[in-house]
View 1: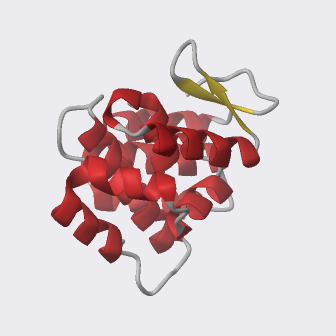
View 2: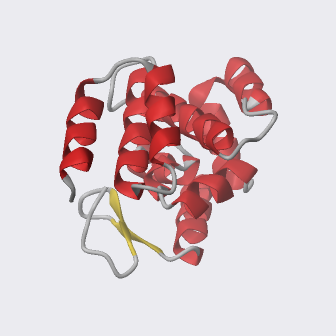
Amino acid sequence: MTEPEKKALSHIATATDPAALLQMARNARGKSPTVERAALRRLTEVSAAFTPGTVEHACWQMVHAVEALRRLNGRKVARMNRMRSKIEKDGEIGALEYCALNKTDGFDEVMDYGMPELTAEAIVLRHPSNFSSAALATAQARLEQRGVQIDHEHLGLKESGSSSSF
């Protein structure tokens, strides 16, 4: 890791402005995937309301991650309007249940970026008591189809061929 990357990661760790974090991710694009992903992950942490560790917080992390990825990729419409209205109508748990049972564009976007822990499917598996057995089975199967191994012992996920948990 280069000295500028170390400096950027140190700054990202304490940053709280989502717009500044998105700009850092943009600036790192094509130069440092490590810095780009760190900025995006931090953006999701500071943007999501609710208490960290809750289903609600994880749901909003996912929403902010997909929207940030869309902005990074230059999409004209970045907001997850259907997901936001689903959350408003059915709550975070209901919206995540729907996403787990019905594959969404957001799933592919987050998976293609290499952050499976920010998918609705991963959130469902990390909070099994809140979801139906059908949602749990579908979420697990969808992640496994994309090469993600489920670490049931720690209720985390492992990328296939990787020893890191997230």
